[in-house]
Image 1: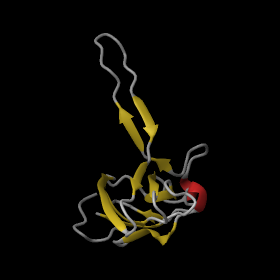
Image 2: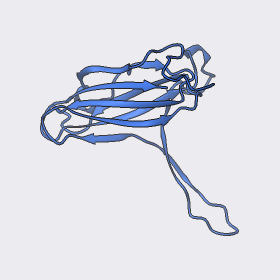
Image 3: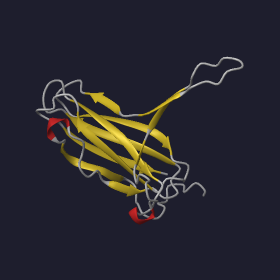
Image 4: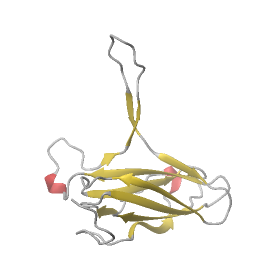
Length: 157
């Protein structure tokens, strides 16, 4: 579709809170039920994170998941409803021979610099109007015995 020039396509209104400010789960567990949002017709996604460590060495992992399905009932048998982002590394090119490139699921990690709340933006992430829903799952990865507090906001255009 076209550029929405700031208007909100159906299903969401900017800013979108993808994770309310709360402590991360203990023992390094991923969020049990990450908040999902429609992203219908959005071209780009910008994520804003605010993290306050629970103890020295605090850090968190986060992982973007997308769904091309507007509702669970549309997921084909045997398919995953939520698809994890990937990282790609091109294989070496040799004339006259096939090459093997690598693709693997990806996650990001952020390590705190101090005790005060820290924030950063990530993106824009291209959605190209083809993703129906987005969510971000997170976990404490540093001081897993004393998890920090994390809030995530999204903007989609």
